[in-house]
Length: 490
Image 1: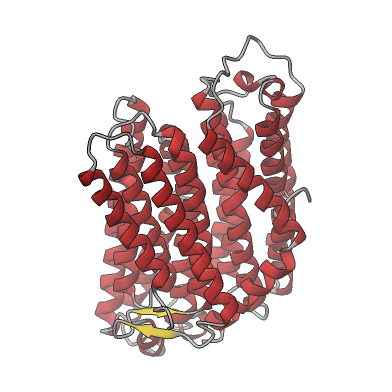
Image 2: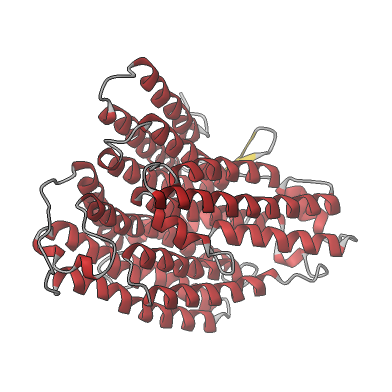
């Protein structure tokens, strides 16, 4: 019996309902392990089924679903592997993080529903489907950021995230409305035909600019990046990991689909919006501002937040290279980088979650000498940070290298050079944290009596995956290039 093509999404949706049902049936029992187990297994199962489909060749020829609103192809399946893997790590770590909090079932169901939305963003085949999927991610994300209701920072982060997110959604939907007004269609295939030689050039141009602005917010790209440090710092650390890794990957996935299938550069010569140039400028400014801002931070969580903005700049290189001679290679490299980034960035935030559980504090100085009490976690932290910087202890080195080679092959050598300079800068501030935990003398004693099982397990799994992907990067890159060729060659 063949499984439906949307089985990964069905698993996530049904698991969200199962979590709520378990909470309703046993309202007074201490069932945190049951809820965390359902969320972790469902997320990992969704990623595993998507990986199985990829290996079996499902989606080499895109499968249309719901009258063409969704398209299950290798690209969509690869995105599901990324977001499902991150959600599994976050759900596992949340077992300890939300253990004593109320409304745990709501927390896990929101994580699962947001993950389903991210997966659907990768399969969206029309502007309407893409927007609805994006809101299925955004609404749970606002609530998750404000989940710690007794924590003023968490509530403030959720409120700011909601207000700015609502504004950006308005900009995005208005841009979609203008594009529809100019073309009369929402579907990606129909749009590609309708925009070529379209007579409503001004209307279409303004709509495209507003859509680019909406995507810039969702991926925390400059100049709509300012919400990210505030939201990531105040939100629970596992939620920060979830938003900065999985949500970012889903936002880029939808942007790749829109600017490859619906609004390809070759059909927009008369519109007056040279969006590859726009994305090239955004990539340069985003990676530079993100890394320079991260280098000046004293707060560890804000440093990771700004560094995630820098990594958004690296992935933007792929959008800038669309329509060029190496677009399949560069999109594949971006997909591979998003997968690797999902493990190393999530792992780094989860080590911060561990530190929060131990009451370590938020600054670099507070982390001084932490390795003496928690050598395993600090060794994993070093792996994550050096891999994020591009040092070959993890797969981040190869995924960045492929991205920069793709930029050179596309004629964007100056972006590749800027990416190398920014990677060197990132090594400076990542090394500061590694030096703090391993070299610096502690200013006091750490009160580390508890070893949170779930967070520790998630950190170790993420560290092993980061190193293993370096060894097996050929398998990852082959799958990523195959997924990219299905999208770019469609």
